[in-house]
Image (cartoon, rainbow, N blue to C red):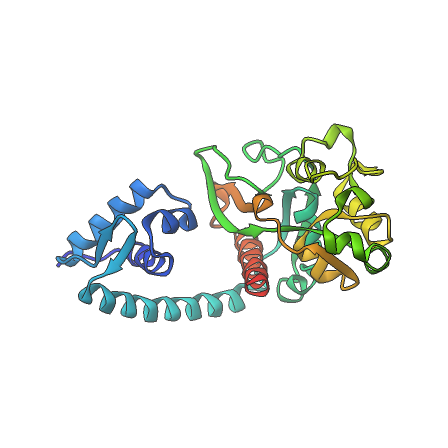
Length: 297
């Protein structure tokens, strides 16, 4: 049996977890063709098939089930080793890390980064908020967090999770317009949305397409303005669902709008992947997005 690549075993774990090559490839940030080739190489190294591939998905062979179980144990051990390394390196990591992201994700990060400073006291974090993506190749930022996967081939990318949206209002609006909300009589309800230059944002297009709904009477140039208006009784507005969880007085008219879901991608130059300060920030962001996924599930 040839030497087994541990990274290929990790991909086998992903395939087992996702059930399909396409799903595992999306999670790994690779193409399905690349993942299929890696699986072929793993099976060649092991000398046996580990997965039966069907049109509807992938099913482990009996031997593959054993390999997956062993690989799972190895992954747990590797995770413990990484955590031990991180604890050792926590005070060694130092310097500035600049993160470029949009408004919703900026709010998501800034409201969750406090405990990062307790673990990595010598790392400074600068979150640069803009609708325009910064150029990582020119080092305008070290890391980008965006609702799409960048196309530059020289970037390291990984999917962090999925951001979901819903339609929310304040408790006062919910009480005053209870009958209209129950009947989904959108024509009788007030709305808050983006201003005209941002009317092509996906969330605003959805809002303006609600059957019979009037145009937002209050319009804002930034997302957190919509949150402020909604929270203070100006009307209904589309908000990221994590905001509703943070703002307990908000009421969901539509808790989840699936067509507005956004896959969130982290990207950074490959030259930075070995940096202790970058690794510390990336690991922490993966942790908070994992917590978000568990809360949203």
